[in-house]
Length: 267
Image (cartoon, rainbow, N blue to C red; front, side, top):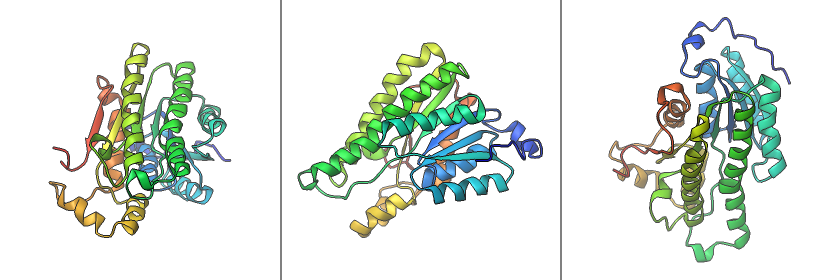
């Protein structure tokens, strides 16, 4: 893969960007919030490595970033596999020489319905992708940050669905609530080393995941809007902006936080 720094001197605003000079690793970066984050982080001056399962999507986002003058590469990664997650993080260091920040965004949706109607195999899949992979990634990211940049920041993508009972997505919400706990524990553990760990909890956001959910629950988007004081769903970039701030030096005294990005839905 081409990892040349083409465009790094011509994009003058990047030198003043929120993430200028940082190397960023992003999971679930082929679409939705992850793709929006990859584009945003690159515009804000970061060199980004995108990770996801679908190479065609990764290539499209990577090419888009490069065409805009950003620095990006990608690696195909199955988040349910231990070796793949670790190798993906290592790839960032191999390409760019360091790791400063990471956005653990990758996740999968469950079929909506009561927990007693969920097959055990589906529960295991949700666990592997939405919880275990976050733990695996954080372990690898902490090691990479510690060995290269020395200090840095990690943001995990949770959900407002983790903050209350969720009869439609019980396993999904349970894993996201566990991500909140992992985030808080990691924040306390690694703060003395200068590694901050936070999470964001998006509300209704127009992604493929929401569209998949709506296919099984017609009218979902309108119900989400009705329960959101701002009266609309979020664009993926609005959520990515929150992650970018938490990963930047401008949030230098923020760690262990689960930041709601929900239009007031949980106010």
